[in-house]
Figure 1 (cartoon, rainbow, N blue to C red):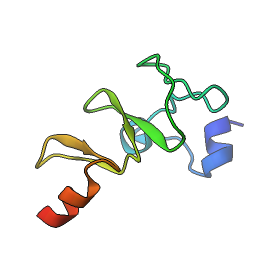
Figure 2 (cartoon, rainbow, N blue to C red; figure 1 turned 135 degrees about the horizontal axis):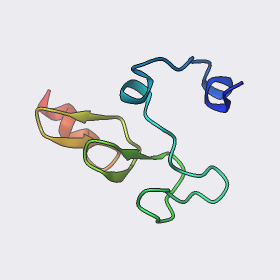
Figure 3 (tube, rainbow, N blue to C red; figure 1 turned 120 degrees about the vertical axis):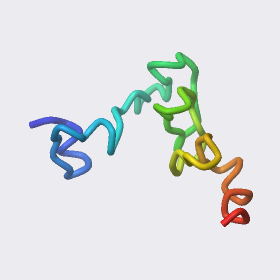
Length: 79
C-alpha cells in the first residue's frame, strides 16, 4: 500500500498532486528535497511560489503569495 495513503487516508487519483501536493520534506532529517535546506516542523513546500513556508496554510491567488505563519494575520485582516 502507498505510504502516503496509509498516513493520510486519502487515496491517490488524477488530481492528487494538485490538491494535496507531494511530500518533499523528509520526516527524519527535516530537509526539503527541492530547496535542499533544513526546515522547522510544520513547514511545507509551496508548489506555486516554489519556496518553503513555515506554517503553510494555502496559496492566495489574490495576493499571489503563499499564506503561512509569517503573514497569516495580515491576510486575515484583509478579509
